[in-house]
Image (tube, rainbow, N blue to C red; front, side, top):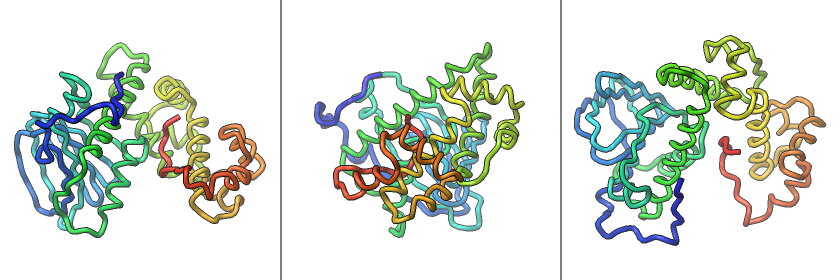
Length: 295
């Protein structure tokens, strides 16, 4: 897949800020139907938003986002009595064509923000806008180029994960992938607690045997390996961004055995937790974003 380097291309003059925008909103009792202009990410900060496309209803809850294609006829509904806060990032078709060529389409599905680098970037943006009045925000064109690149990398990863599932019917593959993603999101939400295989297989509505097999196919690691790596990424983040003791970090990320934590951390990052913190914590050149799963 072609990945543009931001210092090696020029965004065409025909692409204006009017075509690419970020809208921060707080709404209640809202309903709208229209033909969607441009590609967009619709992220819910609090509450729940409902979208309908071709008769199919999507309920997007806080911490999740939905993707919408250019030209899609979409109905938006917000029935919550409380204010629903959201964030929409729009990308013009001209920008997407310039970066990736013709014919690009997004999978119009709901995604958890916790499980991808794209989701973390969206959450970071939402945090930056927190406390500001809802409005349309002007961002530099480099921001849209970077976010669009992350968006299509995310979609390529999803496509690859789907393709790896050994299914005859596409509909079966989509349903199994949806279930696996539910279990994966559960891990991200509860990584600091004890999680066993029974819980995860129940979340996915699959037998333990089929859950392990399908999870490994889609994501390239077993559920146990995924959970351990997720916990280690959170530990890495805490080592560089907090003053917690190693024992506290170990407990915070759900790893109860300090010696086992140390061995696993060193095997993954090349240094013991203490040496890793000593080497990197004060280095301005090292930045660790809030953990996502990108191995």
